[in-house]
Image 1 (tube, rainbow, N blue to C red):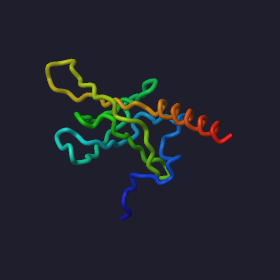
Image 2: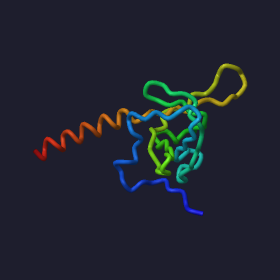
Image 3: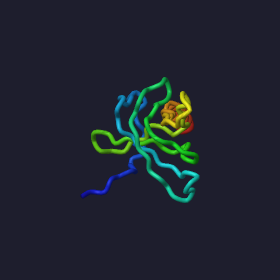
Amino acid sequence: MEPIRIYTHDRSKSLLDQEYVLRVGTQVGWIGFPTLEPDTPCFFSGMISARKETAYLIDGVAINGVSGGPVLYIDQEEETRVVGTVSAYRMNKTTADTLPGLLIAQDLSLFHDVLSHIRTVDETITE
């Protein structure tokens, strides 16, 4: 059995393309250092529940300390892509019972904007 790769050496391919939107029901995972075990990287997984303008709502847990961690997706070529970053966990407080909520993952639109700006600056400097 081959080990699962979670890192792509070609960094230009590691970010999910800006035009590509993951479908509802797509399995994703995220990595973080929860405050329960701050020295231990932990892997979590869930499903895309909905797409907002610049974020994904994911049926999965994000506990304190996981915010800012990468959200990952394995594409059809079995390459790992970064989808976004964990930004929040919205608890379901509609009743007095403790019910699961939704993880909110910021998409990569800001990252793509910054990278294109850096490329533009680099091109200007080399010209």
